[in-house]
Length: 347
Ligand code: NAP
Ligand code: ZN
Image 1: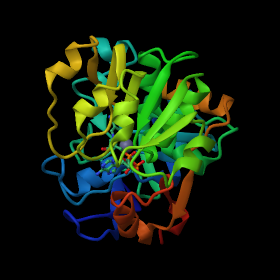
Image 2: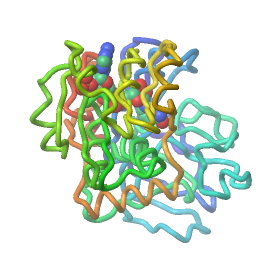
Image 3: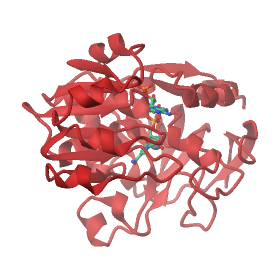
């Protein structure tokens, strides 16, 4: 076993503390990664606060990991010491089911999450709020040289979770896309959809992020707080990408879809939402959801972002600031992703 330093929480709203965890010994196909940066995703917060159900504690979250290869097992062929790499939400899957064979590991019934899962060794998996991680090479991504590691880290979840549905729903020139919520996922959704050629509208609670939204590539920004946007934009979009972490009035959003439009939900609020089927039937609209993305698609997204010069817009924090960062994310006070600099984790 390889003891490494991490930041863990012992229960819902219990402050993060420095601790020592054990990574497995390097197997023949394993890669040991020295983590440089780990993004804070709102999913980390939902999990740590048990908003999605029971969580196993202590919990080391973090599934937006960027770092450098420190060692490789003797059968590893794709990575070498010194390579710049990333790890996202998954660290393993069965490799044999139709989803894995198709490169859609996110749908594998026995995929293993980067944290909060049980690893092949029977021990709980632990995420990126840590100095090192051991991952089988098939789940390691290559970070293109054009992307600095700090702004690349959030792409491993926020990037692929928005890229995947934008590709699946065939967004391109001529697409009228609305992105609801301008947080970690939302700001990447705007950057990626704009780079794909879509006409992007940001739906955000207030005007406070309007200048940023335009800088990210949005053609239009509409504040939703007073409700007028919902009336004025009725039947106006082909796709709405909902990244909001809290409950929404689905009917008001869905009615902004044109004929055959789809509202794709990636945000995962704590409580259930309801909708009137009247809102769907009229324009033959769809209400859909989408989870992260497969490994090949994650690499495709990283290469796409490098080619278009897209990184996340980040605020770097030290590991002792995780609790404060959680409060700020929940308060909507993040522009647009907190990234932990793991050099601040004391040995
Ligand atoms: P985030 O950075 O906190 O962004 C969420 C945004 O939602 C906020 O910036 C805010 O945008 C908006 N919002 C927050 N509270 C709201 C409220 N009460 N009413 C209306 N809008 C509100 O979170 P994130 O990391 O992007 O994650 C977003 C959601 O996606 C989370 O639920 C997360 O768990 C989920 N997620 C899902 C997947 C997946 O695979 N499907 C992957 C990763 C994350 P404005 O200030 O612009 O209004
Ligand atoms: Zn995430």
